[in-house]
Image (tube, rainbow, N blue to C red):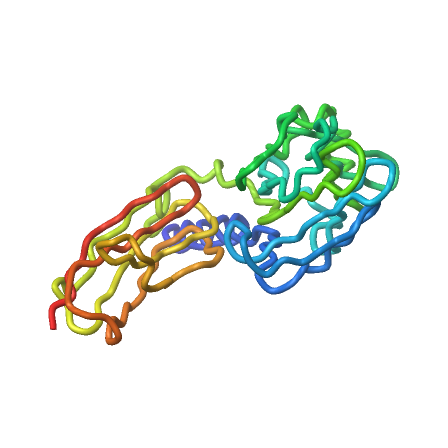
Length: 280
């Protein structure tokens, strides 16, 4: 009886933890309901980080912003102590100086708001990832003020006007609000992944197919690609957001010639490459 109660408590505890899913816009299919104020919104189907992204063009006075869709609004108190993340890139330089406030994120409720900016003042020529802790201190509020704000979020905006004057352009990709995962002690429960790992494919050598497995301790955008010995990409096996966990995929090389190939996993800042041999 006692052991059954413990199992039940563990089940309820883990169910509560993992019921908080990441809210994500990766823009791989469309603009995902985002809108704009003070500029023009363009959807670009490629050249994002990776895949598609949304682009802001400044065409009027005043600072322009992107405005998030409804899925990021409402009661966000379960995301307290989590993180807000996004990727930025300046896509067109109008030749003017940088505009203070570029990248500023504002969370608004019906009776208050909070601003936070972690983007440096300057031109961002490559896709760059930014992260803001979802904590009262980081947003300059008291605990009670932060709780009240998160209880009734009616708008989240991010300033995209990067330069003085008109017609500069900025791209936004992978905007997400992520639940707190630091409360889960690594190894506390069997099956919880606590480290990154890319395993050797099996079988190896292979003909014509082989299996590749890996694991990630965090939910993140993941890519798994195959390259030939010259560094040419020959296959993309995974290119999507995946929760923390262990995964396996089968690689069919029927259309490739015998030889040495490399497969590379990217999860956030983690990158690992392994060699495999296709032997006809």
